[in-house]
Length: 564
Image 1 (cartoon, rainbow, N blue to C red):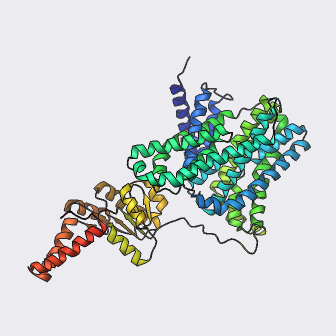
Image 2 (cartoon, rainbow, N blue to C red):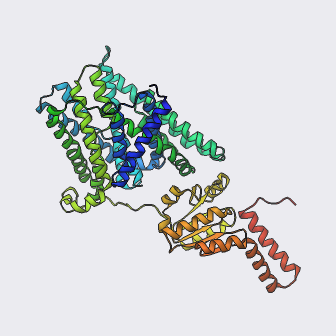
């Protein structure tokens, strides 16, 4: 019976939902469930995937979205911060892992070509698995998350060179240093162009781009996918293109809003990626290959992280950062599967090696998922023996997440007074606003701000409202204020919450929800002018002084100078 692509994908998602529910019930990571779904619907069991190319396109969309969003959170200065350790540790880890894999293959009966392929396959880690788990834990901006991302960037560049080597050697022309040089030049030209546009042109056009939420969404997708496609056409992976596309926009004021709007789309398509990954895991008769599978898995899960931990320890990082970075590297990449499959197609390796790498991928991805999720508990258990990887003099590390003592939502209606108050209190503060023109004003005044919506739950998590001491909302929307008050009452009941209401009814409802104080502008204005009349009487000259003072305030902070 013929099934449409829509019907096929719907059935796969339905099965995936059932398995994900089972994973939730038994408290297991959902990624494991998604990969198991792929194995179940793939050629090994049910063979439901008939439109493999379409599923592959969907999974590539998920990859691009995930890496683009991760890149948005990595300001280019982060690359400079971890560039040295990423270049040294990343290169050494790949080289040493390759040699270990090569030695394992030669010792257990593989020929030289297959041993080399095995070494290359074992040396690379999964960008998608690692960054998805770091994103889920909201730790991609922690020091170890930054270093891990840097290591993956180095690996992706080396992986592109390895893939170029294989495809070139399968052709009559062979491989030359000129091809590698050409690859690097294309990467530098495309990357340099992206960063010039991102740092010189786009900041000048951000009011145009962010003025429409629909256009902002479309621009983000177009930029992320376009850059990923350019890098893929140049011979790199689309992962590195999407990641660099995000990094090139990371310093713009509307990156938080882009991230928030793309995340739901990312979550769907990345599920399809993991299911697609599971469908690639095809199992043949592997009984005779068990020794190679077991030893290769140990190289990936134990020795690869050990190499990273040793290098980072020698470079002066703490045992905690070295351990948590190293744990992320303990799996083989989806690139490794593609690499050995291409090798098999061009006759350089046998189907047995594909089966070996497939099993190592399944075992190592499953194991590393648990290791990454429970890295803190593992570190506590292994803290004493891990001391051997730490030098006496270590880097100063700031592992705390960014959070603010004072948060202001909305600037236009009275926000300036609160910013002056915040600055006088000398505490960390941030202004959250949705209006590009207001963002321009805040930027000119060098006020710390985030472009975003007060009801965006992921944005609020990134701000760290659970640690905030004072939240002020001058937003006029009752639903937004009610949402904020209820949220803070649940996650941070000790915080002082001041918000806005248009009427006495709204004010009483916000008080009932737990607001500390509700500003009712008409009431406050009437109260203030009444107090002035009681103090100054009906002397018009006093009113003139009061008027001039008020007008000067409005002209300086809130409105253009009125025409006479």
